[in-house]
Amino acid sequence: MPLPSSLQTERRGEIAILRLARPEKRNALNDPTVEGIGSFFASLAADAKAVVLDAVGDNFSAGLDLSELSERSTVEGVAHSMMWHRVFEQIELGRVPVVAVLKGAVVGGGLELAAAAHIRVAERSAYYALPEGQRGIFVGGGASVRVPRLIGAARMADMMLTGRVYGAEEGQALGLSHYLVEAGQGLTRALELAGKIALNAPITNFAVIHALPRIAEANPREGFMLEALMAAVAQGSDEAKDRLRAFLEKRAKKVTEF
Ligand code: 1HE
Image (cartoon, helix red, strand yellow):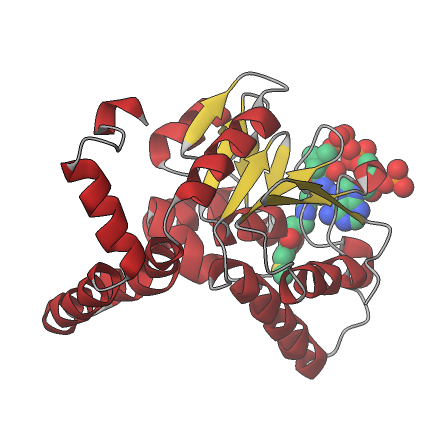
């Protein structure tokens, strides 16, 4: 399915780049854009080992396109939110890790989209808000599940109740971003990180995406068992054996050399 003009794609070796490209509307997310994100991840090339989620212009995304909201019924609202959930789950629980480049507005649905990525690199211009409260609505793109994992439900409640805006430095300290970089450096750093991710054994990337979040939210009894099973699956792979042998034969990089 062809992507809408609000999305652009690019390939750099093993890394696929998806770019929000509606800067005149601050990359507000309308239905074609969200559905296009879903199509991109559904048809990701088999040889892509990581995705970088970037944005054209000065802003990552100003969230839900508010011009689409006015005429929706309650039933349509549920279906719409579930459509976002389906698409963002393709990011979070997809085949490869996703690194997002954040700058300017990372707001409402834009923060929900960013939270579905695995690694977030923020430029110093990034700011975070959940203005749904002020707009008279509620989050619908998975923020209630994903944002508390990053900053806790109490901070998210404050953002929604008071309209609090966190800047890039605060966001970094709170855990909204993993890396904080200077203006214009986000894509370079994200590609560098995606390059490292692409060098991992696929089974490790699979385990981090699919097993780790489930284990982290499981009861410890089940969590330890799941971890043991996942560890055994990974260790049993030929690639793990090759990599361990390479280390023992002093052919592999040390931790301090990655
Ligand atoms: C938009 C949107 C949008 C900008 N939907 N059109 N999100 C919000 O409540 C955030 C709303 N946006 C803003 O507060 C500001 O636009 C920003 C602080 C993000 C950026 O300000 P600025 O001065 O750089 O840009 P601007 O002049 O406000 O916007 C430029 C254009 O983008 C303008 O349109 P124009 O035709 O007058 O040029 C804006 O109307 C348009 N625009 N943001 C539609 N969001 C699944 S549930 C998720 C729920 C949510 O995400 S709620 C939060 C929605």
